[in-house]
Length: 296
Image 1 (cartoon, rainbow, N blue to C red):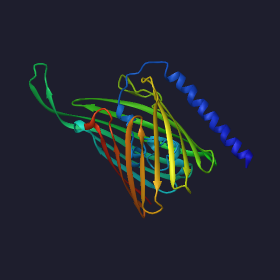
Image 2: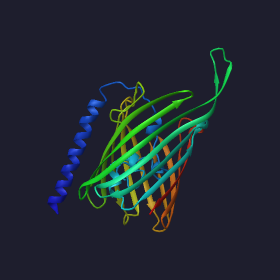
Image 3: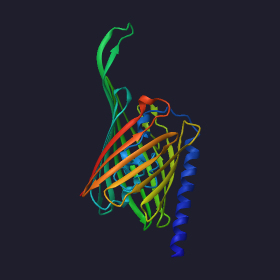
Image 4: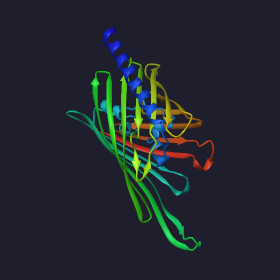
């Protein structure tokens, strides 16, 4: 038992060392900060926990939060999300994951768009309405490298369009998840490694997290540190989830300085979740998130 536990801690240390080394390379250069919606988060449950989900990652939304978490999925799983944002924008997510012979796989789509935007020329003459949309497809794969250690990747293909112009791009997310003890999970993720869209760079970010279960595993506590390449200060995310032991679970947390709250209702194979994210700077930018999921 001690030998296995020591090996898990050693693998955790190696994983964190790799992430820190990679971040040193990443943060040496400047980036444009393209496509910030890729860093907003998905899923009402995860966002209700303040986005502190790197070490939790136990459902189909893991394709976004930490692709290594897909390795723990034992059934086919569908996850969807809808959120109406400020300025008429909509943020949508749909993901499907399933076990296969060589591990687990998933395919997901993240969409942000707005339509009916009034256009004007240089003389302020109306030119009609136009739309903007950006779609990112996640192609994910995860596998357990050891009994308590998982690794995963998400290849991202981006299609971005504004009025009559369009551009494409790519990115890569790499994650690891370690079950250090029966109560403690440790997760790490590199997001948007080598990410580009058109001629713009997508800033790489590093996410490190831990999750711990108490009170007979009914209460989960989680914390993440997130560092984006073109932002000086790292962000702290903290969250918790309490499962009542029945159909209901409650989430709350802080995403940096923004308070979050959520609740989930599960019945048989289905789960319906609601999440609320407060924007501490612009009240109109508060997010209401609705998710629906199913296992079969």
